[in-house]
Amino acid sequence: TVDDVLVAHRARRDTGHEHAGGALLLEASRASQLRAAAQPDDSLAVGLVGDTGLAGLEAARDALQDDPWVRLDHVQLSLPGTDRPAAAVNHLLSDLSFTVPTFVVVRPGAGLADVLAAVAHDGAERVALRCGPDDVPEPDALADFLLGCATRRLPFRLTDGLVQAV
Image (cartoon, rainbow, N blue to C red; front, top):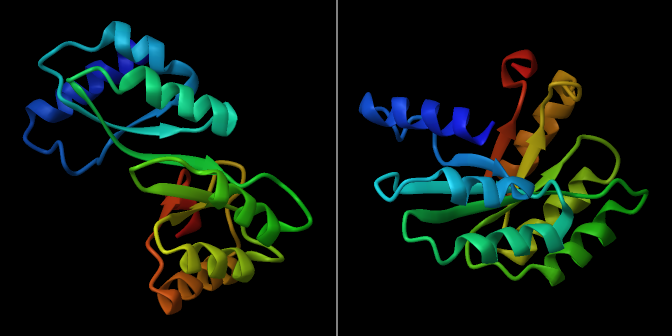
């Protein structure tokens, strides 16, 4: 629950290692629950995960923007499955309206190089590779992603089952 996540976040904050874990990740569909559970002394950096699509992500951002104890750090949005991933990422990038970094969550496979090129060309956004729990990439696919990001100087992150991927 959001309450449980906040208890764990506060406990980590109180150890002095609050920066080790980064922003509190929260599904956009739970933004109202966060508003109800947060306390003014929380000072939360939040990463919204677009589990309800772009419109839901924007609505969650709007719902949280007036809370002084919540700061939107970034958003994450999965690239829809398609046989034309480069076109899908270009469409998504043209529709984004966030003032914080957006991580476009991708999966390894055909068209990944074109997706990385499109995000790098945009210049403002980043990518994240889904690494689990059910989508653990093969070592060659992980290497292709890392090399593709490095050669394009594209900021990235690896999500979920990182231990299995490594």
